[in-house]
Amino acid sequence: MTDTAHRRHALAYAQDGTALAYQVEGDGHPLVLLAGQANNHRWWDGVRADFHATHRTITMDHRGTGDSGKPLEGYSTRQFAQDVIAVLDDLGIERADVYGTSMGGRIAQWVAADHPGRVRRLVLGCTSPGGPHAVERDASVRRTLAQPDPRAVRETLIDLMYTPEWAAAHPGPYTTLGDPHMPAHAVRGHLVASNRHDAWEVLPDIAAPTLILHGDQDRLTPADNVPLLAARIPDARTHVFPGARHAYFEERRPEAATLVTDFLRD
Image 1 (cartoon, helix red, strand yellow):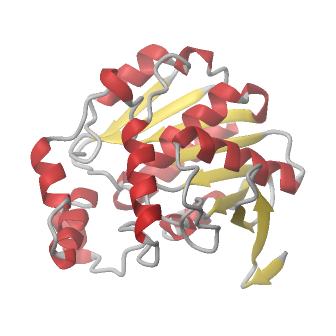
Image 2: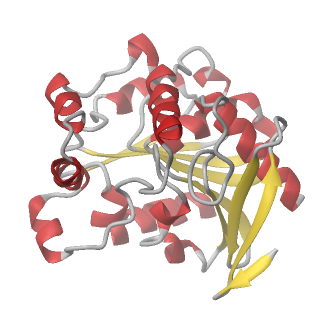
């Protein structure tokens, strides 16, 4: 494990041999932070320090991103969850808190459902159960994200992530707009993994106390998914941020961080 400015970097290995880069920072109870689709660990750079008063944060580069391996196959949210367990095993961590946002929230659902003994508390942000029960983004959003002009796609992503007022006051650089170095096959793999996610049947198996967070202006993953998740996960708590979009965790950082840290202290 190498140490770069107090953030320790290391590699674990998935069952299929894929190298999984992970990063550890701080002390305290372990908190796994899971990034969104086609993003690496830098997704959390703007807010990860908020948790270090109580937690040791663990991030990872999903397979296909960052310094992790980029296999041609093996892309599914359930496989990504197995990769999380491989990282915990490499660290010798039996039980951790898990906070996943966007596709990271979909991954976190599988971690908690398939490995209930490994998750103490669960936070799901700006995510959905997937499958036919989920409320999907509008077709116009899909069309805009599929346009060939990368600059136009970037501007669209900024608008989906942040309100115009917040983006004007915070011109970047942003770490939530995707890993620019991903090979095309990995980008496709992440898209397919997210689109095929369906944890509806296993959500009632989640035993960890769960907090569900969302922005009410989220067009990337509509907030109508909040009551769907809450109805399926036993005793889940919810909070919706008025006026926030997909990256509520940055735009509403003080409030979001306080809600999460208070929940994890309980």
